[in-house]
Image (cartoon, rainbow, N blue to C red):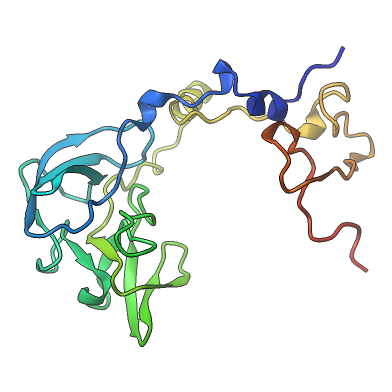
Length: 232
């Protein structure tokens, strides 16, 4: 008798494939309507993030942000009208060209959505008539509203990928902290009874067309394809 494939088992939401709630204790978000200054009271380690997390206390309350390079406890950071210094939260229109920033907002006052991975940063490229052009870590340009805020500096945690993992056991524990499935078995490597693409006879997997609104357990094969078949 066949068993459910991995995608179906994960879609069911059992304890085996459940995200650890302890990993996502800290929500990284800049508070709205910040003025004056804040103080870094604590640097924390988060299993869900690739960078250290900093707790900042301000007049509006406390919040958590991705730490920047060379941050230390007790350091003061300024909001809105501060100088161009690492850690200060400023609007993109107030930041000069060639400045490195991270934790950029997608829309004004949404708390910061882009560039929170350890060691990553974007660069202010040019000022446009209808926004600010920013070079992302992927080297592609993206246009933002000038009122979107960002943190000046480089996100801490650089060099985490330089050291090789070496052992499979270490890789297993790294993936487990992020609630990611590892090792992953390819569909063609499975038996025919365990997966629709199993056995790989002829190495031609069947074309399974999956609907756009299919549940997680049925997402196997071609997901909402625009077209199928060999191009002529």
